[in-house]
Image (cartoon, rainbow, N blue to C red):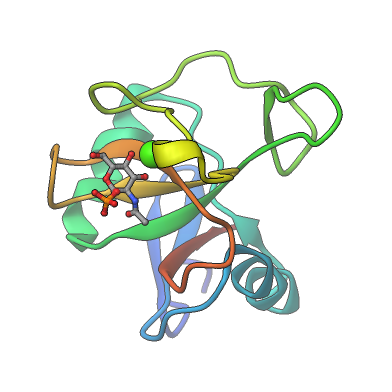
Length: 126
Ligand code: GN1
Ligand code: CA
């Protein structure tokens, strides 16, 4: 039954998996792909609010393209509606902050850009 998949939470129309360990953005995405999913793409306010339930810092499927420096989802679509925290995205102190986490602690559930190599929990969606 699609409503009972171990480790996955269902919130119409998607399933979500929250990691219990922390990895780089790239390794996190690889984990999602191996689960037949991808890092989560946040399409709606409802979906954004839903992620609050997990009370974690976690990678989502949003990165900055090397070529143009624009934000793109893992399915190739450009970012339209966003939920950046105050002063984000900022490439803080000149660092390359090209990957996006949902930051539960500082500004509840808003997005922050951080270095892609940083270990983080992650949220997969399928
Ligand atoms: C964090 O940890 P700190 O203050 O050096 C964050 C940045 C944010 C900044 C906002 C690795 O930097 O991405 O823009 O807070 N860096 C990390 O003040 O979490
Ligand atoms: Ca930042």
